[in-house]
Length: 229
Image (cartoon, rainbow, N blue to C red):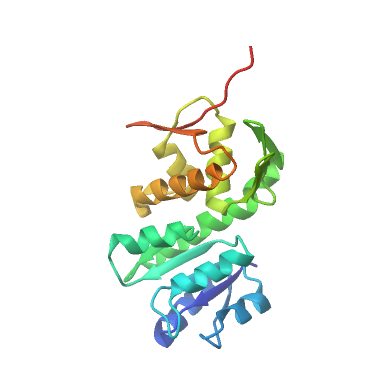
């Protein structure tokens, strides 16, 4: 049974979401002290975190940063704000998805199921290690390393890289990536994929692999690697 930490200060919405998630056989926990959310996170060790942006004391962006300092657990943002920068900020901080309030509960469930299925099931069918451009991709630890250093990736980032590397030197369409990542494109903004890929590139640049992923305008992305002759 997956554990979900719901960081939401609206008591009515929290109860409604908790009851609905319990109906889907999830264990749902709340936060007792909004001044120190990490106490709850450390105690519960959730499999997924849902964070509202507007919270007492510190906003959801702050707590996302704090969680990412310690864990790559999947994070879903909730927000009643509709400014595009909120979604971009969320993804840049390492969130896996962003849902705007008000939302249909079926959409939330679909996103949660897709994320949990992707994060906790995909690595059981493939080798935990892959190599690309002289780097080792550790799918179990969400890390990429080479002689220049090591970077930690989020679940979305490692999965995007895995898909591209498995088809290296071939174009992977944006539609294929979104379908494989989130199962149903109808619930996904096209910008979400762009932000995730740009964030992945920025991290890869730290170890000299920033040019390893090429954008094929109007088509998708390619993980390049020179073929040995």
